[in-house]
Length: 335
Ligand SMILES: [Mn+2]
Image (cartoon, rainbow, N blue to C red; front, side):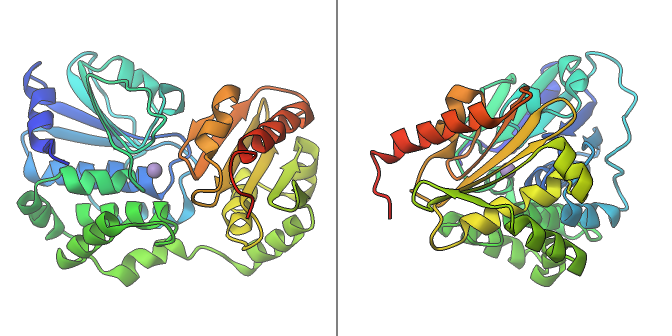
């Protein structure tokens, strides 16, 4: 990336003479949202001590990412800071649409805003919007940052800016299942700054025997359609309550199913209190799930995307989505 963060950050803070910056990400923050927000917060704290920095993360944080945040002695990212309206700037990371932003009121009352993202579906909001397609938002952040300043931040006590950025990339690549040269170069660069791979890997190991047993039960509920190429699990409120299955439990099934050799597309549908929350995964080059979900109001990436809908019965919606899968799949080879 050739736009340096420093230049844009100065523009954000100096044009309106601000002294505080709030960093935010998407709801149900995953490893990349946490890594991006916290990594950038540490970087700014170390290199721009003239500004007050507040990372703000929502509830239901990814369990692995939460382990790193718990060890953080510098920031407690759940506290809502006291802010005076129009006196601070915001940086939004890893968030494609304002609907998915945690702390929208902070965004709306900010004097200036900057967005750093990697979703192709990004709406282009914010005074400054830096969106570039990449496997992780944290990878974009790595390439935007000044290397000498990042090195300085990496000398602090663990977890540092570099640890968080490494975690963001590690999580969004599914532990290097999807990555190219730029991703590996970023990771190598971060290792050279002192990141310990095994330290960050701890955030990837969160399964317990109980979780595996739940997954075994969920496997019994898998439906296979379209010549067995598409697998899904659907759970209404009553079923999930009876079997004590959370959204996170079910959500973890789509990458597992999609990794199967004989499956091209996997999705889950989970009924929450007022709406259905669905998550789709596809094999690279098989079917673009961002495009698939567009007419239904969902989106994300080509290989991972989500959808939230307020309907009582999801059957009709699922049928429509599967029809569209077939339509799109008619133009691609089913193999
Ligand atoms: Mn991400």
